[in-house]
Every structure is written in C-alpha cells, then in structure tokens.
Amino acid sequence: MIKKSSILAFSLTTALLGGFLGNTALADDFDAVKAKLETAMSASVRTEADRDRDRNRKPVETLEFFGLRDDMTVIELLPGGAWYTKLLAPVLAENGQLYVAYGTGTTKKVLKDAAGFEKLKFLAEDAELGRPEGARFYAASNTGLGVKNIDMILTFRNYHNFDEESRASINASAYKALKSGGIYAVVDHTRRHMQKLDNENGRRVDPVQAIKEIEAAGFEFVDYSNLHYRADDELRYEVGRKTVTGNTDRWTLKFRKS
Image (cartoon, rainbow, N blue to C red; front, side, top):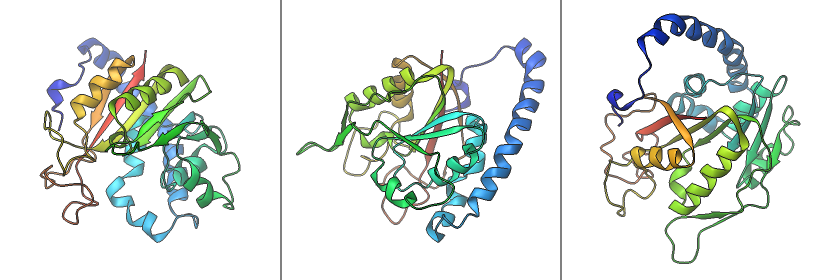
C-alpha cells in the first residue's frame, strides 16, 4: 500500500485557515448524498447479491472520500453489472446527471425496465473494447467520451483489464471530458510494487504505476484512502481465488484535473 509519506502535503497555513471550514462544508454537502445513498441501497432494483457486497465495497464511505455531491455531472466508466450505477443514478436523478460509458451492454439490460433510471445516459457507444487474439489484456480504441465540463469520473476495479496503451487512451479521454478542477476517481486491486507480471497477478495493478500513468495524462494526484486496505491479502494470489475473492486489497486514488 501507499504510505502517507508519499502523499502531497498541504501547507500549515492552508490547513489552519481553510482546513476546518472546508471539511465542515464538505461534510454538510455530503449529508444529502448520504441520505439518498441509503435510500438507494434499500431499493428493490438491488439484488441480494448486490447487498451482500455493501460491507466490502463501502459505497457511502468511498463516495464521500471522492467528494460526490448530488448536483454533479458524473461519468461512470465500465459500469459492468450496474452495481454502482444503481446507487449513483438515484443520488444524481434530481439535481445532477449520470452518464455511463464503455462496455455498457449489461447495464442496459439490467436497468432496461427499472423505474427511476430514466435520466441515465450512455456515452461512447462506438468505443471498441476487446481482447486481441493471444493477448492477455483488453485493448480499447475510439475512447472519446463526447462531452465536456464533467465534475467527476469514476471507475471501479477496471483499470487492470487493459493494456498500457489503452489505459493511456482512457486516462486521456477522462482528462479531456472533465472540467478544470474535476475529479478522476479510480479503485482497483493491488499488485505489489515493482512485482513482475505472473499467472497470479494479472488482475492486480501496482498503485505507483497507476499514479504515474494517470499523472502522465495531466492529472494531479490529490489523495488516497485506506478504506479498502486488507492486511490479510498477501498480494500473492489471483483475485478470483476462493482465499481472497471478496477480500482483496484495493487502492483508492483521487486525482484532479488542473
């Protein structure tokens, strides 16, 4: 895991003059989000399997760390089975807007007839995602999102799926879509720093490598969280193995567009 000593330090003057008031304001802003999240978490659209993951994924704490507000315009990249989409869309339905982008076919099916998701919009439907023959990782092309001035872009446990060139393309597309000051929020399974790729760690990512790649797209690294730190994950085994599945150590990184 990343140590606190590696995080960007803020000046003492800033902390004293602005820190307390700023943190109070953020907490106040999140009260409305928390209430809406808790309602969404109990909604009938969520399955028992969805609810079983709440304790592990900690959506309320995670979204509070990233600074989600209910009036934001947000993109979720690679929403998969719509686990986070089912929470984000209701929070943003009244005052904000949620888009989902890349590999959204399953999300469309899951939420096709679900009430309350009428405002959900789909982006980059012509993006090409696939694993070339003989390749270990997926490739992504035509990743442009087609929107600008986005407040926040999030992606959960997807970064590891792509080759280096495709990660760079996705990061660049996120940077282009965000407004100045917009947040890029990324969570993924931890690979030990500098560990070479092997048969057990292909679905893990070195967080230092991720930081360097995302900074290379122009982002400022803002902060990290230990919310998903798991001391008993030895970082030795593939994340789907029974000994670690559902309990993998994950890094939680927050970036800002300058």
